[in-house]
Image: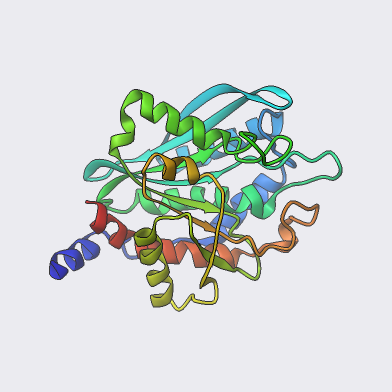
Length: 287
């Protein structure tokens, strides 16, 4: 059994010369932040969608829009999830997700360099790498709208995109082919501190944290445990194994200080290398 798992892991490595490039990711992050605040339903998030779709098209990755109008405390808001699919040897899917909206603030200008920006830029660069890889599972890169509360994180005023995605998957029968979710959120902090989430699936968390140890990234991926409510929760509630990779030890979270000055390309590189190192083991578990 161990030999089989090792063989699978070796078969699905990233090709030599194709590596996650945080300089590319940083360019994407800088372009997104330059659009300014990007709350759901605004002109700026529409510009974000165009940027994401254009960059994915350049990488040869097709994108489908999942659009709907959701009811919020401020009335109906038009939202759009972006679903980018990279075929694998199996039609069973591994979803790697991020939200691309930013929190709506009237008191100050919030551009969300880490919170919304870092993980979105990360997924765009990850698409380039995974497109060149032989993937055991079909990989879906999911850009979620409406993660942020329109007013306050209470009741259903949050995670609009992930809840909608799971509801649609339940209705159309596609949930059965969704084997796991890896959620990326707020990974730009210069002092990257990612804790294990007690709401996440244990075996999936173990694989990623084991990969971090092998990559000598234990200062970023720490063994301490916290409890997080995020876009992975609708998947967990639907019994889809899921893990949230997020740095909540970020002083600039939901402040005007969440700018490019507060984040680091090095942190994006760390998460990219760890996730790509963990991916063969995740695929071997799910195949």
